[in-house]
Length: 141
Image 1 (cartoon, helix red, strand yellow):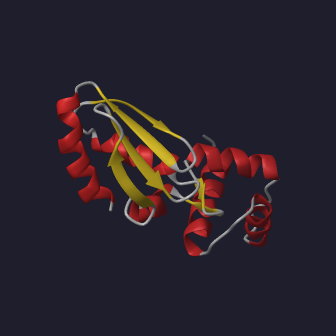
Image 2 (spheres, rainbow, N blue to C red; image 1 turned 120 degrees about the horizontal axis):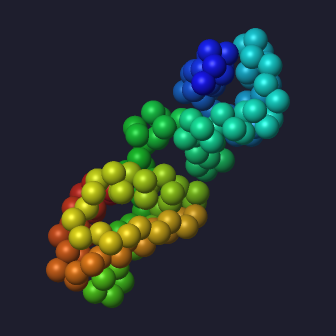
Image 3 (cartoon, one colour; image 1 turned 180 degrees about the vertical axis):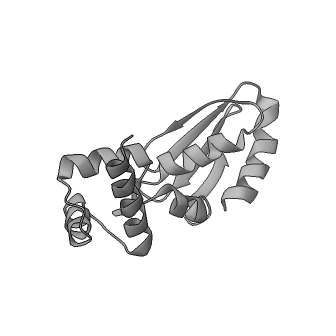
């Protein structure tokens, strides 16, 4: 990565940490006011490369997400049959919460699928479901 891109991306992260921004147009304007002319396609690529997500309409950098996830974004955790857990999140937060759940490496999880506001965790053995429910309830709620 070239130095100009690294500097621009660092400025972008700092900007997103300082104030709420809700559109790429707003981000472009704010970056330009700081001396970083950037077209929308460049900003879009930067957001993707940096792992920035949009939750409840606001762009949030990964460092901010780790402070907010999962408690403030998770609504419920419950079973669905003997091999599934269902996690309900605020709208648009499921992918970010699912990534945090994946990082926890919960025992027995065969896979995780995230939609917009719902996450399914499939277990390879039904005996793992109850301990995972208790653990995730503690961690997420």
